[in-house]
Amino acid sequence: MVFCDADAALEAVDAALMTVRRWSSACLCLALWGHLVPASAAAAPLLPCPLNAGWQLGLQLELPRQNAAGQPIGGFSAAHWSPAEARLLLLSDLPSGSLARWSWPRADSAPSLLGQTPLRSSPAQRLPEAIDAEGLVALGRQWWVASEGRRRADRPAQLLRFSAPGGVLLEALPLPEDWQPAPGRGLASNGGPESLLLLPGRNPAEPPALLMAAEVPLLQDPPRLVRLLRWWWPAGADPARTAPSPSPQGALELPEGEGWGLTDLLATGPRQLLALLRRFEAPDRWQIRLALYPLPPTGSSGAAPPLAEWDLIAIGLKPDNWEALIPGPTLSDGKPSLLLASDDNLNPLQANRLALLSPRRSGCEGAGR
Image (cartoon, rainbow, N blue to C red; front, side):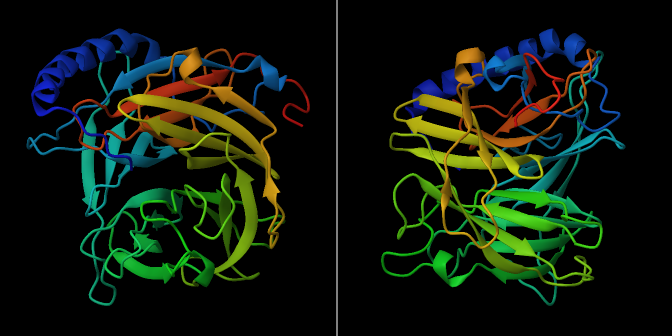
């Protein structure tokens, strides 16, 4: 989450103007969204081929800022799309945490908010009064959530496991010692973990793993290096009943310049990661990039530089606080797509947005290798 200050009077005017722009933008885009039927997972290969062909922006639209009861909604920091159900889950990082279920946009209707599930304590497991839910993995009938910390006992960074679809806390796992707050060490306040990714097992007998990433370097680490943490289950374990164990998974190298952070990760192959990178410069300048990285070996302490980078603002993406990255639907021309979502921080100068990207060229054998 990034907070931006603005003059209150200007905010009120901009809020009204943005409401008009939001719905007019949505109406213009709906006819185009209608052919994007989420009937199957994104086609492979996901990456442009060749990599320097880059990405093209398909569509952008804004979601409502209020639910049917007039309550504010937003802060969307992670997403999950179920092709079979044609439902989009958006995780909110507002203080209590919740999951919003949205219909898929159609030619004759804007995305509809179908319901909200608050994340809540159980009699056996208590949530802190405020969490900062930033990463989401849906695994079976459970939701795994990465909660960002504030270097305080009442706002720890944690890996949380909830029942789905009830949202009841089942387990809260602390991060390893290197990630814990200590003088000159650990995660920076509001510095992660920012993303959570499901990695499939390397063979049929191996359970999947969760890959967690910090947003910015740990305080004891060199500048520009963000650590990865693998949460793994032993062979034969049931992830729904067994707590995973954390292991180092190396680090990724951020772009040059202060202020870059990693907001989400997506696996594009057995050993490759696509990262959504964000940089904010006061008062209102955003930079958003995609970067392709090799997945560092398990247990490694080395850092992986990017294999390729793409400037998304340069292709027309609205400058905003983009935080979520997941595979999108297969397009009518057979190309795969990426779905991005932004976090409005409940700030009237920002918006809850969805956007689709697709490779300018794709389908080459060995793309991205």
